[in-house]
Every structure is written in C-alpha cells, then in structure tokens.
View 1 (cartoon, rainbow, N blue to C red):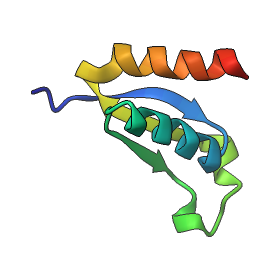
View 2 (view 1 turned 180 degrees about the vertical axis):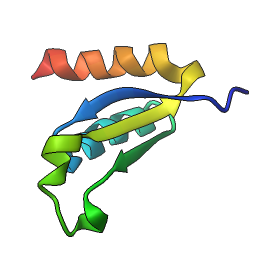
View 3 (view 1 turned 90 degrees about the vertical axis):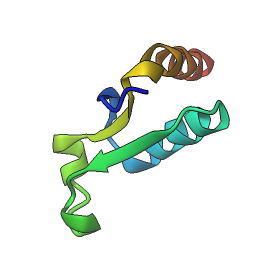
Length: 74
C-alpha cells in the first residue's frame, strides 16, 4: 500500500472541502483536509492559501472521478 499522498483538489473554503471529503468517505476513499488558517483564528487565510483535500496516490483517479461527478451536478 502506497503511503504517498497527493492533493486532489484545492478549495477556497473549508465547508466546500468538507462536503467533498464526505463524498469520498461515502465511496470508501480516505482523505484529509489541510489548511493554514492559524488554527481557525484567521479564516480569511483559506482564501489566500486554499484548503487542500489530500488522498493516497493510489486513490487519485477514483477520487477525481467522484469529484468530477460532484461538479457536473452543480
């Protein structure tokens, strides 16, 4: 099992990343959210640095397909 991770998508807001993370979770894909907003004290930093949704490299193709379906429904 590969332990290498990749950023599958960068979001402007944590809420968007959490929705995408839930979709991946429902499909059995484990993901993590990384953000640099001073521990929530400076949420505007999410706009400048982004909120990164990270997964194992081996799940990248499947995750991109799931997230593409999300974009197609919006």
